[in-house]
Amino acid sequence: MPEVLQRYEAEIWQAIGETFAMVGMSILAAVIVGLPVGTLLFLCRKENLLESRAVFSILNLLVNTIRSFPFLLLVVFLIPFTRFIIGTAIGTAAATVPLSIIAIAHYSRLVEQSLLDVPRGVIEAAKAMGASVVEVVFKFLFVEARSGLVLGLTTSIISFISYSTIMGVVGGGGIGDFAIRYGYQQFMTDLMIYMIIIMVILVQCIQFIGTTVARVIDKR
Amino acid sequence: MIQMHDISKRFADYEAIKAVDIEVNGGEIYGIIGASGAGKSTLLRLMNLLEVPDCGEVVVDGKNLMTMKPKQLREARKSMGMIFQHFNLVANLTIYDNVEVCLQLANYPKHQRRERVMECLRFVGLAHLEKQYPQSLSGGQKQRVAIARALANEPKVLLCDEPTSSLDPHTTAEILAVLEEINRTLGVTIVIVSHEMEVIQSICHRVSVMADGSVYKTIELEPKGIPDVDHTPEYFIEKLTGEVSGDA
Ligand SMILES: Nc1ncnc2c1ncn2[C@@H]1O[C@H](COP(=O)(O)OP(=O)(O)OP(=O)(O)O)[C@@H](O)[C@H]1O
Ligand SMILES: [Mg+2]
Image (cartoon, rainbow over all chains, first blue to last red; front, side, top):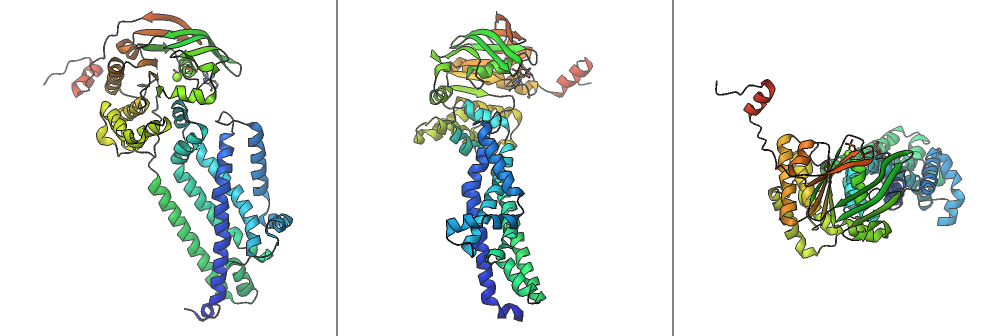
């Protein structure tokens, strides 16, 4: 192992751990909240199962607004909210708040788009068989859209990694922050390059896993 | 079995169905024929309230669907099968699972599901394909799976929207034979929407001719039986050239 990496091994592992914590929370938020929100966006559309102009417009506006913020501004803007939820606006835990919010907005849009790809006829058949809205969602929509949902999540996770790199501004740490503080600010260019390599490998792995899983579960 | 009384349906400012009265008797095969845009599909979809009429009433098996609560309506739909021109199978489920879904929705006793699914697949002659996915099946086979799925919960009524319109004449004949058998052996009332004369003539007992959102006339028919279509090379050559090709 190169000497710089040995010298900073503990810090590097810590940075990797912080990145995983931040991205992990973002994934949880995306799946637990973003998936239902995206499904609701889809269902509330015109001529859909839960057609509701009001709900659709509100969710749509919310998602668009969050996504149109430059992310750094969103982090700053959310500081009072973060402090309210976590008790502090500084640190890795605090960093997960803005990350989770952008994660929800990001993934819910991709969920909505995947569901739009499900042929209308399948939903028709489900309704004709007497399926309730919940049954249509779980037994038909999610089944038919599953590879799109996985690919969407893959794309999202890679974005979350990218977002997490700037969380140094609120003391969130992570690989990106480490690369800036040690590699850039202390002129250890080789260290910075190693960090970039770690990020590239991470993204490659995630994309590979996502693409493979999506392909295997796609029987269409 | 199905009574529709004074049914009208508008889409925005277009009157798709205009004050239609229709009565489908239990046990018959009822055809609905007419030009494209006449309102055939809309009328069929009104029978299980996939489309809600603006006025009038829909009574199926003695029960008024219009006054039902959503849950009751879903229950009512479970005893009405429906098949479509484009089959509408779930592509990510195996043939077996596609049929089983219908039983899950109907809360069919768990330990009897496998037997029932296989019974339905055997009925349409596809038991050996239970583990395949729809993508690997031909159009005719997909429609058979759709029929098995529609039959799984032992419906009293089977609604068919252009069930053979994306199939070739030979496969059409096969599907019609299955529908005819369902009607004859299981006593299921069948409504078939089609724009193809041969389909209606071969198996329907009565037919309503639609135009412009109205039923123009309802006619009693003597089903002619299903034509024997055998796609040998000789058949194509004869059709194309008008010559009966021998061994020459
Ligand atoms: N959801 C809808 N919204 C608006 N217009 C509709 C809708 N469904 C049907 N229509 C219109 O109602 C008319 C009747 O449609 P329908 O699908 O019932 O005709 P059809 O007789 O089944 O024709 P085809 O043979 O082409 O299937 C058409 O003019 C169609 O454009
Ligand atoms: Mg039609």
